[in-house]
Amino acid sequence: MLPLPLYELVTMLGLGAALGFLGGLFGIGGGIIVIPLLVLGFGMDQAVAQGTALVMMVPNLLIAWYRYNQRQPVAWRMALQIGVLACLSTWLVAQVATRLAPDIMRGVFAVFLLLLALRMLVQSRIGAAPKEPVQRSLRLMPLVGIAGGSSMGLLGVGGGLVATPLFTGWFGQKQTVAQSLSLALVAPSSIIALLTYSHAGRVDWSIGLPLAVGGLFTVSAGVALALRLPERRMRAAFAWMLLCTALWLLVRPLLMH
Image 1: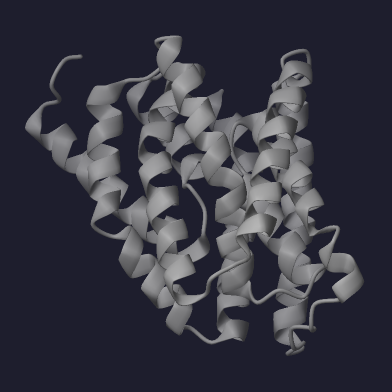
Image 2: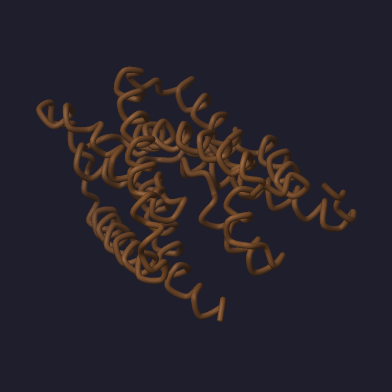
């Protein structure tokens, strides 16, 4: 592992800090942003970029989950069920994903995110108040772990992006509670993925560690802001982030070529 030049070290620390803040604010790992940057900006192999991003994501996700639960605790049994189903579906779908065309998978995922974002934006525009959770439906909530885990199995990222709108739109959870549950989904899968990539030698620690250190200083601030923002504004902000992510996924193949 070669040490980074000073300017690259400062860049990685700054990028990690920015992504840590966004991760805390929206309850995501940030991999969907940093992986393309590592591929395009540093010429990394896709697999190495994914493994390196996980070095940053794992501590950010764990800290964010801890901070959310300090203020708005979620049921640990529910979180455990979601996490277990996410891990299982991530592994199973990953076995199938290796046989599918990545561009087609990315396009379908982007369109799905686009539809979720538009739905959330329409709801925030008309001022739709969050519904009270339907008690019968709460038993089905762990199944969101399958949806989020499947996303991670297909692309290696995006579990929280899929799960959060499902928790809010289908089960009437508050935005910050939904993000906390999404972190319960993503964090365990990310730890398993990091161990797997590291064992395979697909992690550049010289870049991953500065990214992680940068995020450690800002993720709590992102969570604190999320917990202070009004519910409607938080949903709108998440929807816009979702929309930008979907558009980025659609444009990215053009940049790669």
